[in-house]
Length: 178
Length: 105
Image (tube, rainbow over all chains, first blue to last red):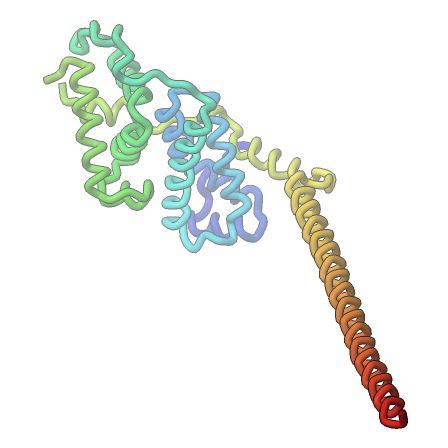
């Protein structure tokens, strides 16, 4: 079953999904899958891992449908659960990533002349320490400001700002963009 | 280069392979249809409950044994005390009898 086009207001889809309407559930997945999949993909830089995380998140959403009070509550929950699942999966040690400092070969790249800047940036982001990676992804993929990110990742707002600052500093250093 | 603009471009949302909702629903259905095999977690709880019951029974039996032993010891003490009292009475009676005998002489 593929995601259906939006035939009704999102809140209607949520209400119908709560009543057991699987098409409405598919509609909700369709509305949010690129956000959930994107967060996990940028965190792990792996489509397989992102698929695994996205399936787990939406399965948990399916089981918890009755608890969602509104579409905005659902969106907040999805961002929070996806972030937590990424961190948990990383901490369970199922994926060993090298740290940013270990990526020597990237230093040699001249980003101004690099036609693969986007790929380079994705790779560099996926190699940031996990908290920085999550904060950067929420900031630039979801266009959230630090006060919104701090609620999702359950960190003080100053910690979020600090992670963002350090991440940008590290990325600039690695890209040679001073 | 504007790093923040480049990050927004690089970190845009990504779509999964088509049919994610169907894959999720298939997993949900498979879980719902799964035969009710005893879950390892339930095994753990059963083992814990059985251990607690056994501990309670053994504890109760041990407490009962201790109480019975104390009861036996108390009864023995009472018998010994009774025998001591009886012995002192007999000795007193003997002394009385002996005293009467010496007066008659």
